[in-house]
Image (tube, rainbow, N blue to C red; front, side, top):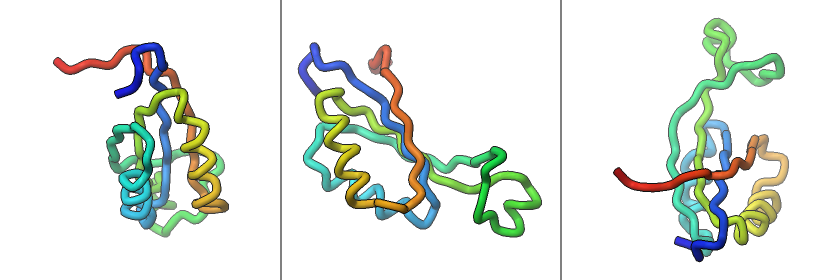
Length: 104
């Protein structure tokens, strides 16, 4: 992992299920020092577009979320690369501080 003085951030990406393998392969191929997990999630909200009939009935949109731990010093470059490679793909993202990290 990074230098202990380099704060770790949590980058969260939410993507269409059809993009799961593409994003996973892309993340694995990146030179950045990041670890990530992926999981199926359901999107809810007032700005839901492109819902299938079953999603309209249940009120949830099937999505995949990636949670990426990355040193702050590498975060902006990863975001730049992501925006270049996946422009207009509908990926939603947000960044949070990672306050504690460990193994029990």
